[in-house]
Image (cartoon, rainbow, N blue to C red; front, side, top):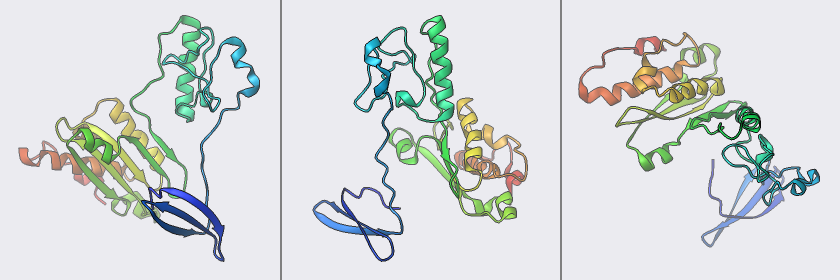
Length: 249
């Protein structure tokens, strides 16, 4: 995986696929691939709605401007979902729709804002994340980071699907779970467990003691929580529990 290409200058066909030429810091280079997919963002299909006629403002891409209550610049109009250009995901859209409908009927009082927003995609293998990235977490916290490979996870071994990992990022000071990142089978499902733990304010020790069903792909998260808990409590003597055997592959 390569990031920060700089200025992408051109694409051209090669005998085997596509060559992308780019320049960065005065140096030109290229990258070859079988296929190039260019994602330039989204625009909203709102031009024919005559929103300006009722006082609803949109941005330069046609997305409807809303405040934290999903209220548009026209006080009697509320909007939710992809048309607002915010988190363009179905669960977040449903939450925003609930807030918009409630506020339209009862007055602005409910927000759709939530600190925990798991995201992922059903690729092969799947990937998912919730919370802070390791780099972002390190900006404001002293952290403990644990990574458990799917080749250490019983269910993944049984299924022969051992490609992947589960990374858990924990605050060293208060043992709060700051982030979880997963690549591998059932990654999107497993990330939901981390999301619930984070939303519920569970410390990593609480998650480590949760007896998750065995054998499941969630075992990777359980093993990561146990490993993080042991690392964080190493200087304070033994933990008051030993849950490692629950997730032992």
